[in-house]
Image 1 (cartoon, rainbow, N blue to C red):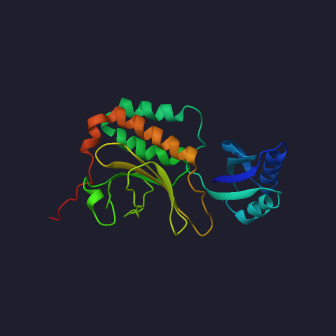
Image 2 (image 1 turned 30 degrees about the horizontal axis):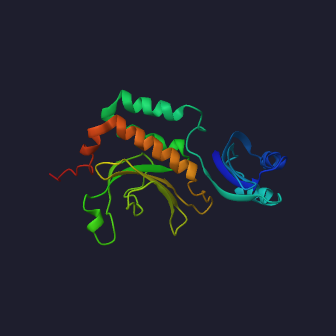
Image 3 (image 1 turned 30 degrees about the vertical axis):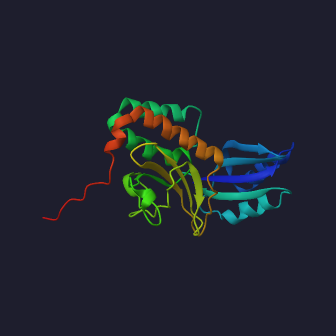
Amino acid sequence: MLLRVRVTLPDRPGTLGQVARTLGVSGADIVQVVVLERLGGRAVDDFTVVWPGAARVERLLAGLAAIPGVRVDGVWRAIGAPTTTGQDAELLAQVAANPADGLATLVDAVPGLLAAEWAVAAVVPVDWASRVGGGGATVGHASWRTPVPPLLPEVTPLRARSMTMPDGGHFAVAPFGRAGLVLVVSRDYSETLAPAAFHSTEVDRLAQLVRASAVILGDRLDLVGPPAVSANP
């Protein structure tokens, strides 16, 4: 299976090589490395690795923890292939090519781009600011891994940000800027794997995709609402 491993490490020569060697010795086959941040002598890197399904992740964590100055921020299952240059532009081209299904295309694709489990386009009532406790968002479209019903975070006020829930799950949200519509992306906590929170660069990427899609889709977003419920005969 594919795993995403996020580590914070000293930004000095040799440390990245130590992490890579440790991953290899533990049984992980590295397929991609993405540098998320370099600041104050520290770096935050995402490794996408092929991991033997029968192997215990604890072995991997112990090996990384033994490297001086290295901290494991999260290990979680990656959905789909590693991200490559140009995927965001390709997704926006698909949205533009078929705007009638543009929102669904965006929602279905975002989890793979951000190594998340599921995503929904949530609709916030126009009077959310006057409601006690906030929004009460409903689901306009959900990706195929979304639980039913999804447990959504409080998405108001509408601004791009990341959130961590008491149960260890993580969300990233980004508003479309119209119709009370916001894209919500989730990484769920499990007993065996604990994902990392969405990094600021990931939130920025999500916000850029949402803003560009809003420009492409325009007035079509005003028609988004909760799915219709069919009446029993």
